[in-house]
Length: 115
Length: 111
Image (cartoon, rainbow over all chains, first blue to last red):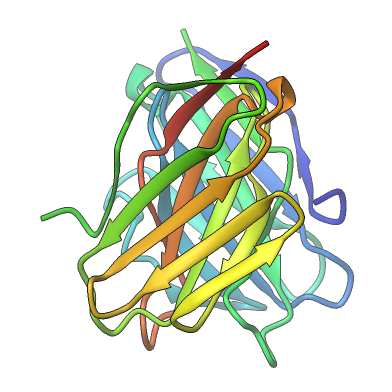
């Protein structure tokens, strides 16, 4: 859905560097979801955030990964000290929260390549 | 048992045929069910949602849900080459905000 904006669309990092992926939800949406898709795999849930709160981070690796959704500005998925296994497409989706029926509309994704 | 399982395919059908895609899920508390289409290198696109037992039709697409059997399917009638994509089944677990996805079934429609 064009309403969810992600950037950068493509990011190349060397092992050990940091990657920051940004997601601006649909206007008026207060809930953001991050998913990761490895090559030839389905989408894996990582984290669900509301403004200034992490609601469910059960899919986040325990180390090197963090996410935030500040009161102002986009949601950020941060990967520290990247390794080759982090190479994947990272998709963001948003929902309005109230009246949410489970439908998620995804942004175009950020494709991370770790050299 | 995986939470959401799909036949990985690939599934190949001739143009004009019916394509049948299947999905099973493990959590009986699941309440919402979705089919996404994903073209290579693109983001998933929601094409169908279904919440109650039975069939739901939208154009050439029909979603079928059987909660007793924990089974969801997607039928594509009059398949077109433009339907060639990976189809992802997704389930919203009861009491949870997140979607759980299957690995997807790759469909090829041959002209």
